[in-house]
Length: 393
Image (cartoon, rainbow, N blue to C red):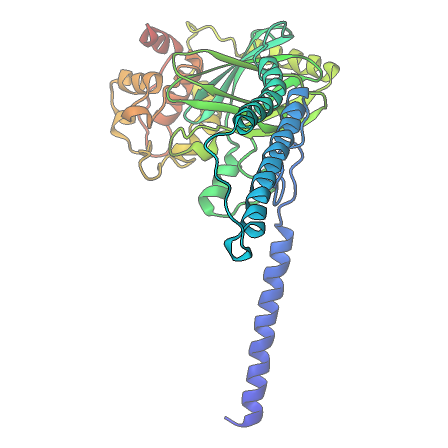
């Protein structure tokens, strides 16, 4: 090969490398992550922007305590280094000899006491306010499940509304493929918690399986959700918008897939949302004694499966890793329908398969019928809501 040929080949190779680098740069820029309003910021160092009075007080306390600690650090080390340099032996300094000093004893007792009181008074005021859940306009129970949140509106406008909030399936697909996209990656849910602005919202927390924690930094709220215990916290959001958090206790292998999304809306929008949810509940209030056609159950079960089961068992029913497949499953294909009903109601494998008692009898009957008659599972079996109701007892 001639020198010119080598030179031209080198130029073409360099051009391809440059084009590839430019393409990668454009792709990186296109998928660049931006600050998420109400959520995390890029290269965030400070606390979240507060949208409640409590969060603002916490922010102020953070800087107050940091300032006091910094002052003590500078003062103590300043005096220490000044003494080391000013009174060093090479300058002929001689140490004073004394057995005790009343002045020093009083100083190192009084000064720390004053510092502790100066720190404790404002902190106590905020902590007491954080625990005051009385006179709430709205009370909502947040139940932690592996791995989702269940919300029940217990008191106030919207009483009786309940739903599950699960990581959006598109987010899980992106995670499985290793291709994160969007500013709300792993924070998007299918059913956000909706509350009105400028209203005191009491959150009652508990859990169905292991310890979880309901945390929204912009509200200054973090409350553990413990099985068998009821804890509570509160917030009053002063701005409308979307605010994000995550479970803050290590609750299992999918801990990272348990986000919290709170949508704060105006009173008018909240009233409209409540009206819409009440209509949905009325439509879903099925009679458990109703006998369904198999085709109708399968159609409904497909929706229930996509919303609650596909995240683990996958849309194709093949499962993944420790998650057992439903396609071709011996239990799904078993003539004894009670086996699958028992697993869906009570869970299995020490929580790897969680309990789904929070679903209605009709929803459970529908999703079981769907799995028994989908993929390669052509069993022809139908599970009626009455069979699920009987298994609950």
